[in-house]
Image (cartoon, rainbow, N blue to C red; front, side):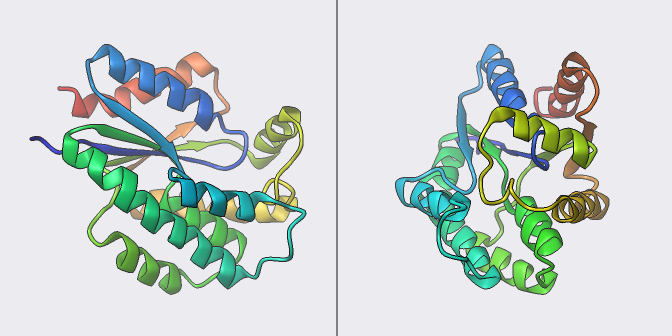
Length: 207
């Protein structure tokens, strides 16, 4: 059995991850590729409960270390119960955010030590890394306006503008550090152009 491909979509608030995840799922289906679509935090019953705790802005104040550990706890379940079994079956996994989001939100947004995130990444993931990461990037103001237009904001979406600027900078740094894996697409261009770029970057795996 040929191992499947692990593809992640990353980006700040309102960059169109959900829309483009749906597009990619349909596109890969047209090429007869079996796809498992999932998200982080989440993907399993336990991980979805952790997601609820993390996004609930009315819950008790969550310390930065608790937030980071909860994210990796959810990730450990997700990898063991969903991601690794799917890849072993030969399915492709499309994931709405993964560990690059931790470097961006907890490393950049929360100003946590990168070395701490790296240690947890190696502990929880072993050698597992995405085969391809698509980073959808847009100016923070555009993304936040889109997020607000969707309705009630969650705990992360309710952060101040400076938090999101730091998140974006951390994402762009990840792209600089891992240019072979992370492909940046400007998300503030017309949707048709975004999706053409998606087809281009994923095409290497379809040849």
